[in-house]
Length: 62
Image (cartoon, rainbow, N blue to C red; front, side, top):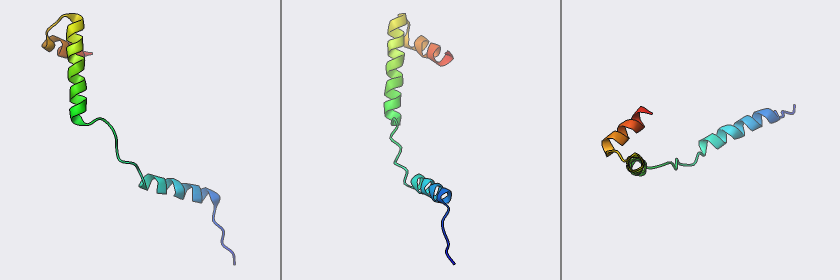
């Protein structure tokens, strides 16, 4: 008796194997995100000639 493998099943197994070998997350670190947020607040305050508190409130509202 000869057993053969279904090519579609092999593709699915390959996809599952690829999920197991995920690369580590390479997003923004929390301190980088905070720095960019602060820069955005400062630039908005400068552009609107408004206090930092007002610029932050406007960014939060929209």
